[in-house]
Structure formats: structure tokens, C-alpha cells
Length: 303
Image 1 (cartoon, one colour):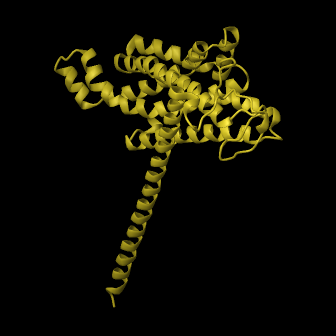
Image 2 (cartoon, one colour):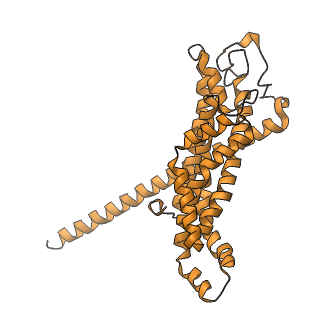
Image 3 (cartoon, one colour):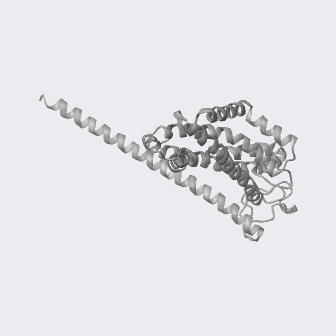
């Protein structure tokens, strides 16, 4: 009788551990499935946009996004027009594909430039430190002290609303944040044993930076590239909605929503469908970036 209680406690503990492992496994499976769905959605969006760019309305599911169709004014979604029609009968799906090319191109270019400039600044500042680090931190702090959206609006307003101007303004938004993130990651890597060992052996610091530090910082850059792209899509769409992005006749996701809001009561699909595409795309980018942060074991609190 004296051994019954310990045996029951042991069995209960084993059952609790098994249940916890089962829940962890189920949670991991759901996260993996969501990760796969997020990647699949991003691949689908990119492929459709690229096909639309290459083949245009030669594809059976695309039309001229500016073509007026008097018989389908503000018509709802249908088999021939899955996203419905706009105020003058334009195919909303074709507009979303056309707008996606410009919106995604701007977001991708800004992300690449932000990582190249901001990542380079953070990498050099975090490794060499000293005066260089002080100057980079000063630039970062001064830039981040200005409200980001106001800075972008100011630049776009005083210059012509071209794609180059929008990319330049949004790059200024991305550079300081990415520089700070990469600098923090570089500081951690620079203090690790293999870097110190290379320095003791007399290896040139530039070689250590490129061969030892940079490869270990790359996971951070890749992860935040997805997060940055999502942020830029939202900001660019906001500018387009306000009429401060690339001017017409260029089409972006934000400009489609801005046009559709005029007759939202009669044709809500003209706003809902492009908004849903933006939402799913940004959500997928954020989820993929977040999962990569976890899989690369990057501690957000240290960044």
C-alpha cells in the first residue's frame, strides 16, 4: 500500500508529460501547415503578377485593367470576373494583378536597398565600433526621431510623384530600422569565440567581417526582409490611398482601394477584394518572417 501513491504520482506525471508533448506536436503541426500555406500564397501572388506582366491580357483570366465595359458597371464577383467590376466596368481582378506588379516591385526594391544600405551600416558599425559606431548610431537616432510617415509624405510632396521618388522615400524609412537590427545582431556575433580566435590568429578584420560575421548575420537579414516587405506594402498602399504615391495612369493596390471607396455603398467588392489581397499578403509575409526568426533562434529581446 505504501508504494501505491508514488506509482500513481509517477503515472500521472508521465501522462501529463505525454499530453504536453502531444499538444506541442499538434501546435507545431499547425504552425508548419500555416507556414506552408503562407509560402504558397506568396508564391501564388508572385507567379500571377509575373504572368500578368509577361503575357498581359493574352492570358484567359486577365483583361485590360482599364477597359470600360458598360454592361458590367459595378457588377459583383462572377465566374468571368472573380473580383467583380469597378465603377466603369473594369475588371477588378486584372487591376489587382496590374497593381500588384508596381506595389510588389516597389516593396522588393525598397527592401533590397534597405538591407544593402542599412544592413551594411549596421554590420560595419557593430563590428568596428568606435567612432564609426557612434556616427552610425547618431544617424539612426536622428532619422528615427522624425515621424516616419510624415517624412515620406514630405519627400513625396516636394518632389514629383514618380516611382523613383517613392522608392527613395520608403528606403529612408527602411534603412535606419534595418541598420539598428543588424548592428545589434553583429554585436552579438562579434563577441563569439570563433571571431575572437580569428582575430588572435591575425586574420584581417575585413576578411573576418565577410567570412565569419556576415554569414551569421544573414539569418537575421533574411527574416527581417519578409517583415520589411510587408511594412513597405502597407506604407505604399497608404500613400496611394492618399494620392501621394505613383501618379495615374499607374495602378497600385492602394489606388484601387481609393478609387473603389467612392462607390463603396453600391460596389463594396471594389474595396474588399484588393484589401483582402493586401491583408493576406502582408499577413503571410509577417508569419513567414516571424517563423524564420524562431527557426533561426533569433532572440527578439536582444534586437
